[in-house]
Every structure is written in structure tokens, then in C-alpha cells.
Length: 375
Image (cartoon, rainbow, N blue to C red):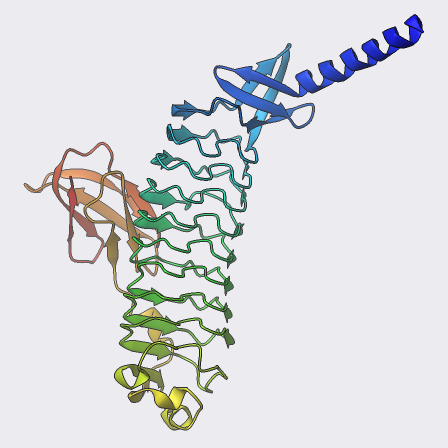
């Protein structure tokens, strides 16, 4: 009997040591061992606070591990967390990693990040800008940035192939975004209830899913390229102030009455390719537009690119959209002194954190200068 009891105790001790060995803490950050060489950041009962810097590697019991992921719920409801600095070794931000971190205002998305999970940043209401341009994301997990209500700037990477369901749902302060010409589908409610005032769908997109731009109350102009083969139900439902819908498709797509429900189409101008206005004038739903102009020339979307700088005013980064090719730039102060210079691709951002407060001018090659303010 004593031997049996001792055996149970021995087994229990071994089990406990295995559990303990799977988790350890270094400099206030808890880690979970994934394999013999990798760990992920994990949650802890007393929640993280302040500014957290995650190292590329950590040591435990003489073993050095690479930090490759931010684990599920790692910073869940850590309302005292204000910033996070990620190392280049992190490739994945898992589901709900920063869910409801309401005071998180700064995070760097590095060039090694290839996955952002479900609801990873949901309700991160202090994130003013989200710059994903350096990442290698091909998709973004559903609900990833849902209810980031104060985000004014989102920059997507040129590797992105799909914008998942509800990714930017309720991003109410987001007034404009550049969707890269690699995206093939825009998911259900991807930008629903956002503050978008216009949207240029790139020529890579084939699907605009159900409710994709539902209740974008300030949406004035929509540009749809010839690549789109399907516009889902309620895709532009509740776009109450829509003024112009430009669609570069010769044969009218079959759509339901729900697509533009909530908007009196007799007050909206529909622009279609040259020679196709008669087809739209007799097509179900499309014929309800007040004015139908067959004036769009071939590749009109590419020709009508407008340079935009946002946000403005800006404190950390300014983003540039509307570039058709790489462009050199200079930033000047009010007396004409050059402050910054470099090159940009469409959708790239410029870091202005080190600039003093004041008025500045961004000058792109062969373009008029654009004023912006650093508060």
C-alpha cells in the first residue's frame, strides 16, 4: 500500500514538473513553450500594464528560445497596457491576443508577421493608427479590428489577398483607406459602420461580399472596377448620402434590391462604360438611378487617382495614397528647410514622431506640395 501511495506521489510530481516546465516568466513577461526552440507570450493573472517590450529570445533553465508568437488571450482585457514593442522574431498574433486592451495606443507590426487571428485587436479603442504595410499578411482574421472606434489611419500590406469578415466593422473614425491591388475579396461586413467617405475598389477584387460596406453613412463615392463579378446582398445598404456610383463593367451585374437599400437611387448618379448606358437603363435595380452616364473610358479608375495624405493633423505617421508608382518625396518646414526625404509606394507611411509641432509641406516628385500639421 505504501509503495502504491509513493508511486502516485512520484507520478504527480513528474506531472507537476512537466506543467511547470511548459511555462516560465522573464522580466515580468510570461512565456509558454511551444517546442524545443520556440515560445509564445502568454497571459498571467495579474494582467500586463504600461509599456511592454518583447525580446527576440529568452532563456530558461539554460535553454534559449525564440519568441515567435503572441498567444491566445495573452493580453486579454489588460486595460493598463499602453504600448507593445514586438521583435522581428514574432510571426503570429493569435486570436484575442489584445482583445479589449482599451488603452493600447501603440504597437509595431513587423515584417515577419504573417498571421493576425480572430478578434486579435477587437475593442482596442485607443489605437489611432494601424500600419500593417511592413507585414507579409495574406489575410486578416475575422473581427480582428472590430470596434477600433478611434482609428483614423489603416495601412494595408501589398501582400494582402482577402479582407475577412467584420475585420474593420465599426471603425467609425476611419474616413479613407487604400486597398492594395492584391486583394481579391472583401468579406461580409468588412467595413460596415465605418466612417468611409469614398472607396476605390482595386482591379484585383472579384467579390464584394454581403453587407461589406453596410451603413457607411458618410459614403459619397464608390468606384467599382471591371474585375468584380459579384456584389453581395446589402453590400451598400444604408449608404444614405451616396452621390456617385461608378462601375466599370459593360454588362450589368445581377443584384438584389437590398444592395442599395436605404438610399433613394433617384438622387444618385450612376456612371458606366461608354456604350453600356442603355443596358443599365433597362436592367433591374440599375435602372432606378436618377442619372445614368455612359462616360467611363477604359481603365478610368487608374487615370483618376488622386493623391491623399492622412491623417491630418498627425502625431506619429502620415500615409499617402493615390500613387501609381514609386515616388521620391521631401518634407519641408514653414521656412522651406528640408526636414525629411525618401521614397514612397502607394499606401506607404512616413514616420513623423521626431518632428516638432508645427506646419509642414510634403512635396512629391512632379506634384504640388501638400500641407499637414503635427500638433
